[in-house]
Length: 441
Image (cartoon, rainbow, N blue to C red; front, side, top):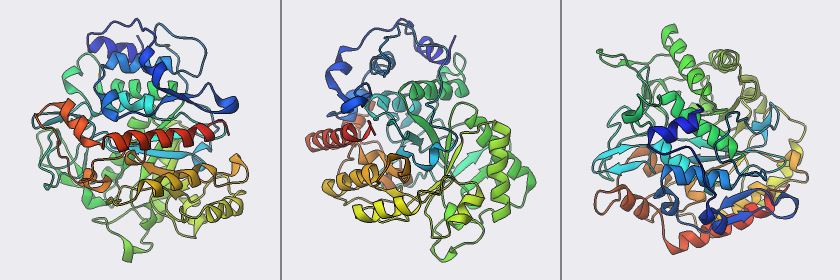
């Protein structure tokens, strides 16, 4: 039984799928000869998050680019094929799967199921380049994993434990006897790949933001100077890549090897340069994933430094608000096929205040700032750039804290209150129109 059907069975659903008329009604299509590419737009996220798991999967199958409706989810799912260097021109869209998890009272769980439910509203990949979802959380955060806290209490995603499994915010351990955590990740990846999306995850490399955990032992401080810790780090990355992820977003990658440390805001030492080369090479080698893309946070003009480190894309080097500037750098870097710095709509440190008009303009520049689609620069955006958050929170706040905004301690109320309402719906419609013009390229 494939993992998607196994997931359905674990939640007491049968595996016979039915065409979803609701998805057909809300579907947007790419223009011109890309009109088989579909996604749901002009919606509020709660409209998807409140649906059942089976409805979500039926929606995904209904929106298939193929012309066949599968009454049972297929066994053989392949990742969208854009070649081994796909990450050099991809759009990376980070989804904070913890923020959209099921907040029941003070508990926080099933973030991966919520990410599955949101998949129909993520535009699929274009003809020439991939859209890639980056999940914010995979491993347990150090303090308060599995629980929400007050909006002012720290509960950071930037501090994680290795060696003790995956986050209770994300994985449904109540179902782990029926479907293992690794199978839950594989089901997510198969559904995303079926949607025409690539997938990846965020990882931390500042050593004082990492802990090594073992059952019945106190947590141990992670140290890059400890070969056992380095080995654990590599194996943890390989294990999760083996469930189907193809991109790794490396937090603080700019500063590896002691580069530009005056602007470093992480906590603790970073790998040295040859060590990071070894790490990226070993993850690729051990996983056997020739398509694996490494994305580094921030970039400088020393592009060869990042290419030789094993990275494929960087963020935030090029001013995204100036279309001509984006197009200029696209042309200048068109012969660099292994690595390129990129543009971003927003990042995980965004603290709000960016107008809708500015965000929409940045998305346009990311998706159209080139002469030829094959020369496109990589881009990075956040969940908020597709689905605006309520006005008293922001992307960075939800990375640092894990509040429930529920008015009655139910998950449905949290989902309704986490995002903006009518203006957010119209903004999502405008984003949908921009992607409709881009996906046939």
